[in-house]
Length: 336
Image (cartoon, rainbow, N blue to C red):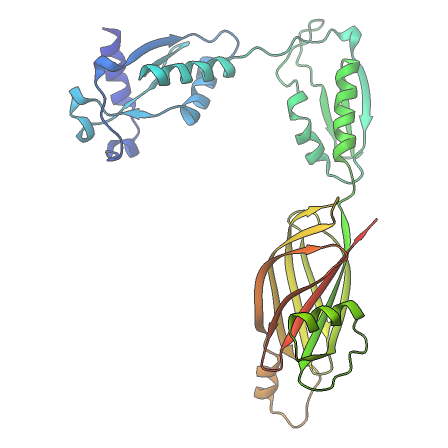
């Protein structure tokens, strides 16, 4: 009888989107399903039910009701202060295990006479980032055994740029230790960019490092090399940071852009994503050119784009373009 009630409830409560059969799902027989009732002990049933629906909830197509052509039945239903689980036996175990985790009791509340308070002011990370890092220590919703009021063990004082930690001494030390390990300056590096032209015959490599020229000669035998432009920038190489550098020459400008995807400080290795080199004509007016020609010349054109790994202390050739090729060479040096 209870199975029939549950089936009726789940069919009536099935969302509109679920009325369209999922042709990849195999219908199941009612006889093969298992029914369990879960009664939460620590958390409100509706709170657990909402989370469970989004994580382990699913719909079943029943053979006895028309299979894929019928409205599906939800495997979870809320009945007052209980949660009904109706599914295949092996999946019922998964659902029950999840429900038990969601209904886990709060850690034992610390008595007021054991609480200590300590302030922590982040130096390199934001207060919000520090607070998020301590989410597993946050005691929101717990109650003091002495006064019966809500006891917050982590508070953010935005006006003072400080977090106030109030908990048992050992937990405060753990929180401070975690914050100290995270509150470190973002790694920085010096990025040096060389735009080099390869030519047949004699060329003056003045201004180019000897190792750079040696590497290019090994890479492209038969060419000599001359400097077109040079630029360098000290920048953060923290994950997600965008880096831009303009290299000016007598008659062209080159714009290098990239995103730091990852950086390993131990090996000084930077993974560069969306690395791109654009070129445009000089902004210096040329009296022999019309306004249209000047505008066209100044319009940026993409020479190449790529993803690459830059190793600290090495000259990395990232690409070349043109009949008299322009090479982009980048040198990465960590900044301590």
